[in-house]
Image (cartoon, rainbow, N blue to C red):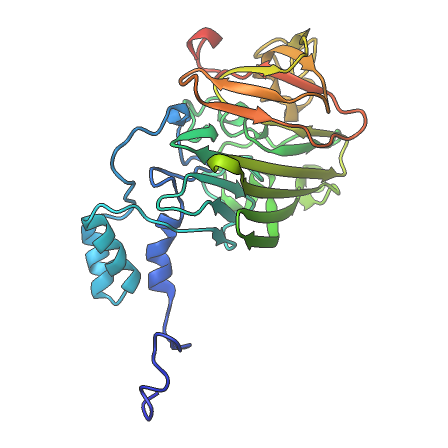
Length: 364
C-alpha cells in the first residue's frame, strides 16, 4: 500500500492488523436495540411494563455524546458515525445481529428503523441471568408481541417467577430424578450453568424477505450426591424464521425440538389480554399447570414446576387444531395469530392465567 496507495485503497482493502475491538465495543449496545426504542431483554435486563405500545418519541441512546466523543477521539469510526446520527436524531439500522460470544441473535426486517425484530437467547453468559435459555421475543409495528419480564418485582420469588423457565417463551425438559438447585440468585458464577444453560449457533440464512437462525443447546444439572455437574441427556434445538409477508405483514416460524428427559414443555407467554382458538370451546381444569391438585402458590410435586404452580385458570384446547389469536388488553388493534404447524403425538395444549406473584391476580 505504501508503494502503490491508489492500487490498494483502504476502503476496499482494510488493514488486517488494525484492532477492531473499539468499534465493536461501540456498536454492541446499538446492536441490542429493537425498533429503535427498546433494548433486547434477557436476564435482569428489561421490565414487564414493556407490554405497552412503544410511544416514546426519541430514539434509544445507550451511549451518551460524551462517551461517543471520547471513543471517536480514540480512533473509533463507529463512534463518530453514531455521534453524527444522534446529533441529527436519525434512527439506526443495525440489520441482523449475531453476537455468538454471549449467545444472542436478532433478526430484523429492512428499513430505518425496522418494522419488526425477533430475538433469541442461546448462550451461557452469567451474572444476573435467568432460566431464559432459548427465550424468544418479537416486536413489530411499534409494540411488543412476545416480551420478557426482566427485572424481578421482588428477590423473594424471582426463582419461581421472573427467573423461572416457565415465564419465558421457551422450552424445557423435566428430569424426574433431578430437582433444581435452591440457590440464591447472587450465587457465584460457576453455579449458574444450572440456571442459564448452554447453547451454540448452528446456522443462519439471509435472503430477500426471510431470515433464519438455528441454535441448539444441552441442559446440565448438579448432582448433589456426587457434588459435580452431570449431563442428563437433554438436548434442545430451535429454528426461527422471520418472514415478510404480503402488505408488510410478518410471520415468525418457530420449530422447537427436545430430546431426553421425562416431560417436555413448550411455553409461550404472549400478549397480556385474551386468547381464543377458533371454533374450540375450552375445557376448564382445576388447579394450576403444575397439577390439578396444586393450587396457585402451593408447593408443587417437583421443583421444576415452581413457575407453573402460579399459573391457574387452566383450560385445555385443541393441540394441532385450528389457529388461535391473542388480543392485547392495552390495544385492541394489536393481535397475534398462532398457527400450529405440527405437534408430536400425545401433546396437550393448555392455556392459563399467568399473573405475577406479588399481589392478587386481578391487581397484577
